Length: 95
Image 1 (cartoon, helix red, strand yellow):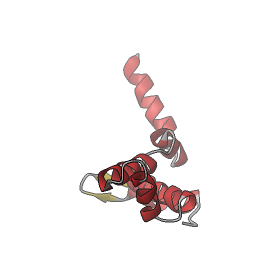
Image 2 (cartoon, helix red, strand yellow):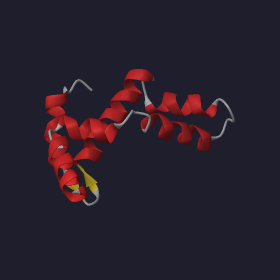
Image 3 (tube, one colour):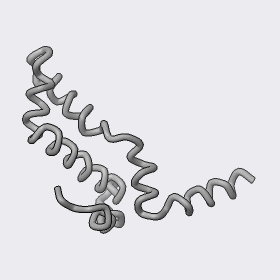
Image 4 (cartoon, rainbow, N blue to C red):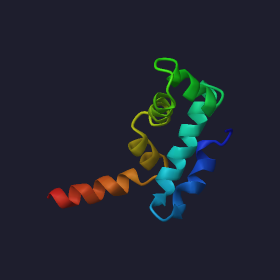
């Protein structure tokens, strides 16, 4: 929860099957957002269940909250210093 951006960069090289460093950093930030905003994952699910009372709606709301962070891909790429490399490669392909 208390990891700063420099500490999160350590996870940029993480790989497990199809789950890579960007996924890992976003996962950590998504959980951080949930715990900071709601206190627990259970509280998110319970809030989502208030409308219909079904666990399906609660889990759907948890997913919505987890993936609610803005522009995560560009933010993470720029955070780990790969954005300029990516744009250079992209620009060279369009010429």
